[in-house]
Image (tube, rainbow, N blue to C red; front, side, top):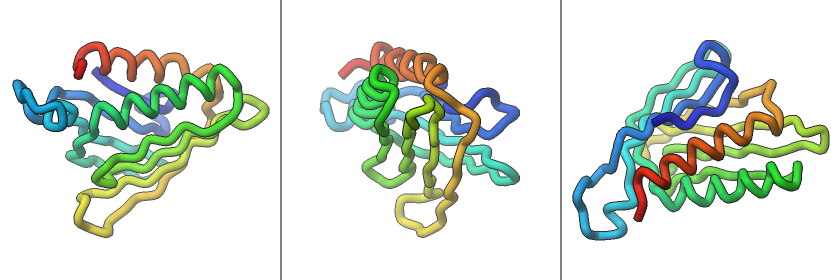
Length: 142
């Protein structure tokens, strides 16, 4: 199950495969909310591959904000991870064009970051992204 921002894997994109729970079978809601979510970024001549972990509440909040942005054709949706793996902003401009920018960190304890932008997207790119995030929530309920 993949969450992707971008038109294709051959162009600039952010890809977050959701591989499963970090702590399968955990009865603790905090532990059960963590997912194995490596992050891949391709931006210009740069690529980044991170062995990240994101939480279901982070993805849910991002999905909710994206739905609002799509409905209003304005505003900003933010994905911000607790451990600072990723900070992502998706802003809808009045024309419907999306301004996507972010930073990824290769390790929560290091200062190594990659800042990136993904261009050429518009509001029509939001429904598939929202659908992918909903699919994650359905597959991994809390």
